[in-house]
Image (cartoon, rainbow over the protein chains, first blue to last red):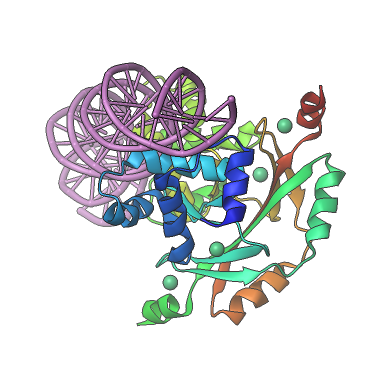
Length: 142
Length: 142
DNA sequence: GCGCAATTGCGAATTATTCGCAATTGCGGA
DNA sequence: TCCGCAATTGCGAATAATTCGCAATTGCGC
Ligand SMILES: [Mn+2]
Ligand SMILES: [Mn+2]
Ligand SMILES: [Zn+2]
Ligand SMILES: [Zn+2]
């Protein structure tokens, strides 16, 4: 957990606990798109007493603080990733679940203006392209 | 349920049952964005013996047939709407849950091309703008 | 170092969704 | 029109995802 993360948590009146440090480390080093149970299993290897409740509670703390972001990738549970600097979006394969990131091809400002037209102040833009990846299409054709 | 819906179900080898007709009618007449339990409660008024399992099973049938679409509006459960002719997207208020529809401001073709760049064949484009609606911002300022 | 509110672990509770199975029923063919 | 039977339904139990209650622990401001 870097100084910026600590600052964010302190500003939100949250404590820096070993569990929170560990869970954020796991998310950061994973490459992204983990679900709660994957985070739990990875973190538990380093801290066997860790409980799943704590993982869920920490996810909520980090989510509310804006450190991580919740993803809906078409399954019955959520996935999480670091809220990165540059906004990126996701290509999701309906068949195998593969997730590919790509950068926002249209103006962020365009979206904000669009929201404003309806009186909304936009906090997040989620663009998901759902389809079939090359491998799965090849598989299909067999 | 119109002739087109019937055709779709028949083509998929599915039967036309009163439950399926009713559930689709409820979704169609609701204005959209219902969750499974709301569909259940509304439909149960007309067919008191209806079971929640049947609602979930019908949702899956309609979803797989492409008649309805599953939405992830930031809650712990899904919402559903008719898969309309023209693609529209959603503005979602984080505070009160309000959902406003808007039309796709960028080229559908652009997204397909973008997917192709990664070997994906795009089946659906989901664009969600999450933020704070005018009322909730006014409330906030008090 | 102290004091105490915030946090944790653990098990139970809730919520969302699926499953197993016996009873019912849509629908293609006689 | 009637039959046969696989598809579908209702119901209750089972799973999966997430949250809660509470007593024990611990971070952190003083
Ligand atoms: Mn990502
Ligand atoms: Mn809609
Ligand atoms: Zn794939
Ligand atoms: Zn609102």
